[in-house]
Structure formats: structure tokens, C-alpha cells
Length: 582
Image: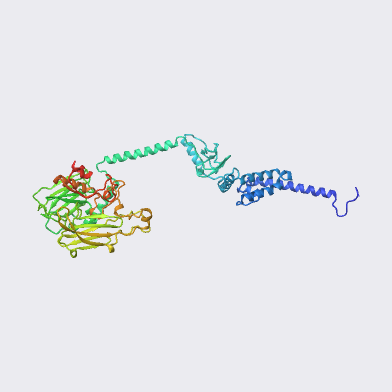
């Protein structure tokens, strides 16, 4: 049949040629449409816009294992290899995908890059962010350059497209201030944060900090040279005094007439903790020494002291243009024929007064009328021993006192002891740490340290060593609560009571510890002045141990635990008392 008519049902050769030509035209048309679409859609020119081109090339998921990746590569290679009739470009993409995903390090970097693609700027594709031009113009203006922004060539940030003003020290990528905390990559360098090389910047910052500290130091030195300078603690104490005085004396109240014979105001015969902390006293056989802290005293203002009203006179100590610090009536008579000795510090914030007793040898049990027994006295009639589980208060009594004569009352605020003809209103208040007003905890106050219901007391018979003289000891055992969960976890089970409290300006640095009772706290160093005055008169004085050196042996400035003693030598006195003697 060679050269004959075509077989029945077969297409004519000219028809087949026409079909092939139509297919080629369609392919060329599709390619032209693709090129046009690429020109209209710049995103189509980006190869790996979503960061999953390697996974698509191998036909695996992002969480594919190494075995699955190897199997997919072998299956694809059998089809796409040029020797098998595949396309060389497709096989190159397949080979690059396998090399990248088979290496764990390169695969993790590739996955990380995929997560950062949303911050990537692609020239001609990503819409440039607006703004930022004013930053580079400000930099040029600071350099003294007068430029027309419409005619200048601006190097754009390679991350966001804004004007750039920095260069990455690692990859020489240009970036702006907006992209300082955005990761980028360029060339062979992987994804990293911008590294800006600024020679001398560290030295400049150090110099600026030193200049600032020097300026502050010079300012503090100039303030300290001012005779009326007060630090923040002293100013806060002055404000607290003014508020307490306004409430106790009354706003606009006239001073009490100390020489008058009429009725006196109620505050003259009443003890108040808020003003009681500003004075302390001690006594010898003939003298009574009083130390007063004047929170509103200034060098250019006088401090007035006046005593009037007969034997049981009224003592008033008042700074100029301020309310009285002390305006109280003495509880025992004073010898009016003897002069009153007074001393003041240069800053007029402390006054020392020495009075003579009307009856020599008489023991004063309180300084002012209405005070608790031995309140604010240098030597107390009791001793206190504390631990993490209890606090023991020991009071010495005559041997004829019986247990039925003692009255002991304890509540969460303090204790009160009364013994007929021996102890009259021995009332003390437990120290409670002040809470910071900025503390926003759900339970702002820690639970009370003592459990009043478990308090126990006893009266024991003792004998003095050397004289065999009998006497009784009233022993009061105050039981403390169990440590809280925070104290057990963070404070080694130590209850955060007065033993771990600290008052700014009172405790030395790194020394904690406050006395158990508020009436025994010395916030302004008045005990040292009283010890110096008693030692100067009699050659001996009672020296109570500092609470931080007694409660925490080895933590005080002298590194030795202190005990309450009668000091008969100057070396046994505290440093503050030595300074007063000098």
C-alpha cells in the first residue's frame, strides 16, 4: 500500500501538521501570557516567597523525617534526571533541595528563614513603608549640610525600604533605625540581628555616665554645705512630726501656760508613741538626764526650753516656728533651787538637759505624768531574750511577792504587768514592722508574731551569787507563731519579726534587729548621749546592748556579741557616747 490512499479512519498528514502547529501556537501563547503576567505581577518573579520551595520540590511536608526526604529524592531523581529524559533545571532544584534538607544545620536555618519572610523587603515587590525620611534629613542637618531632599540620592534600607543610616558590620547590609531589632540575612551570612560598628561609642557612654555622677556628687556636696540641709529621711521625719503634733495639739492651738495655775490641756498628762519617740531619759542618785530630738530644728532657728509650774513643773521644748516636741508635766518633783544645764548640737536637732531631783536618792519610775512605768528610760526593769520560737521577758521582784499578787495580760498589741506596791502600769507595745504603701500584695500585712492564747508565766525563786540574797523572777514566755510558707521557702524558716527588721538611719549598714518593744527603740541615737552624761557625772553608766549586735552575734560593727553591762571604762562605751564625751 505504499504511496496509496490512507487507511480507513486514519488522519490526513496535512491535518496532523495543522494540529501540531496549533499546539505549538497555544504553547507560545501561554508562554507569552506567562511573561506578561510576570510583568504585571512582580510577586511571580520571587522564587521562594513562602519559604517552602525545597519541600515542594521534593513533595514532602515540613515535618518530614530524614528517611522520608531521602526516599522522596530518590523517587524524583529517577524521573527528573537528565539521563532519564528530565529537565536539567528541575533536577538542579531537586538536588539543592535535598542538599539543604538532608543537612540538619542547613535545614534549621532554612526553616528559621521561612518564619522571618514576613519581615523581608523585596525590591520592586514589597510595598515600601512610608516615613523615616525626616530621620536621615535630621542627621544631615546635624552635620551642617544643606541639602535638597528632592535631588539627593538616598540609600534605602534593605529590610523595609526606608532611608537607611547604618550598615551591618557582619554582612554590609544597609538598615535603618526602625529595623535595628529585626533579623536579616545577606549573602553567605545566615539570619542575624544587625551589628552596628560605632568606634568610641562605649568610651563616650562611660564618659557621659561619669559626668552625670560627678554632676550629682557636686550637687549633693553643695546641698550638704547648706546649714539647713536635710536628707530625705530627715524631711520625712519632720513631716511625720508635724502631722502628729497637729493631731495631738490641735490646729491653731495656743501654747500651754507652764506658769499658770489653771487647768492644763489633756496632752500634758498623756503619753503618745508618735511624740514619745523623740525623747529618752536616764537617772543617777541626784540627777535626771533628758535627751530630746528636735526634728524641725535648723541652724538658723532657735530652740526654746522652758520649765514652770512649781515642783511638778511642765517642760516645754519647742523649735522656732514649730509645734512643741515636748510639752509634758514631770511625774516627780524637781529641785527649783538648782540650775538646769542644757546643751545643743550645732544643727539644733538635739538638746541635752540635766535636772536635779528634789529628793536625792529617790528612784523615778517615770519621767512624765501619764507615762507607762520606765517608758523611754535607759535602764529597764526587765530583760528580754528572743529566739525563733519564743520571747522570754524576765522581771526581778522582791522575795516576798507571791504568784497571786502578779497580774499579766498579753494581747496581739503588747503586754501589761502589775504587781501591787512594786510595778504600776508596766505597759509595753510590740514592735510591728511598717508596711510599704506601694506594696500591692493580696495580703499586705504579715500575721502577728505572737499567739496570746499560748502565753505562760511563772514566779521563780532565785538567789544572788555571792550574797545568797533571795529574790523572785517573774518569767513571761511569749510563744511565736509558725513560719509562713514564704518564710519557710525563702527565709530558711526564720520568722520575719523585729529580729530581722531594719529602720533606715538607725541601723548600721547590713545590720538588722530592733528591740521587741516600741518604748525601748532608739531611732535617733539618744541612748549614747545619755550614757555619756551619766558617765561624765558618776564615772559609770548602764550600757544596753545594741539590738543588731545582741540578736545577731558576729554581725555588728565590732564582730562580737554584746550584752547589757554597767560600763565603768571609756572603752566600754559605744562610739556615739565617746564622741559626746570628746
